[in-house]
Length: 308
Image (cartoon, helix red, strand yellow):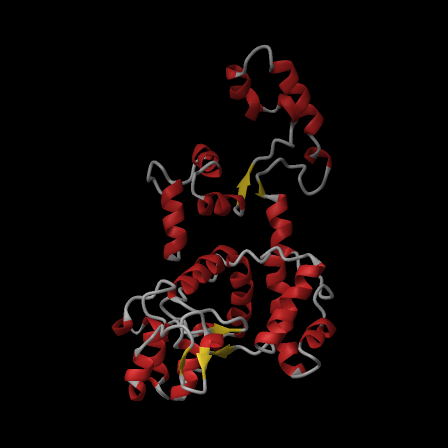
């Protein structure tokens, strides 16, 4: 059993006997940890059904012995009204049958309407270019629009337009190979590039990162050094020597940047895909090598910024 599921089972098995009793399952359904409740609701369990035999069945003998006498008649009527299995093959034997949560079962087998996000919509957002890439990402756009609850047509249009503008639906990584003037314009000045003066290669207000001028040879055309410097000490990254800046540079259809964003995406992905647990903090390049992850992170980013 995978370690994650074993950990969840250990939390349910309160008496540590290796078995889950009816009482332990009931308690797990009300467990304070959402992951435990979610697993219990997805279990398929074999047991006798209350829909077989009515109130006269022997399995209810102990129940009625402990039942409030004022409620016995009501309880018996309810059990008799709910009885139907004895009249339907193959349940007439009364043997234990498999049970599953009906809502969770339907959720597990349902698929997003293939026409919800169409190739025409994606191509339009991408100005009719790179149709092979649009086709490649389309199934995952539909999958994660559903998983992240993005069903409003206006929101989808905004989302697709943003991706089309930012990346053309390509799974890319940030290009940090800048010339000296280029890196100073993008990263050097307080309040951003609009306050960089290309005439004198300096800032209209003041410099934000002075080493881009004083140590140009270290950072110009050295993407790793540049990222480690300009992304240091923010977005969850450690200092310049940690290599976090380059490790957590921008990647994906919408650029995911900074250790905090990769941590947030890890949590969101594992919540939406409990059978495919990943750690994008440990393996950030997987959002480039795996198309599905590269698409999903765009939805995670959208949610993290409150754009949904």
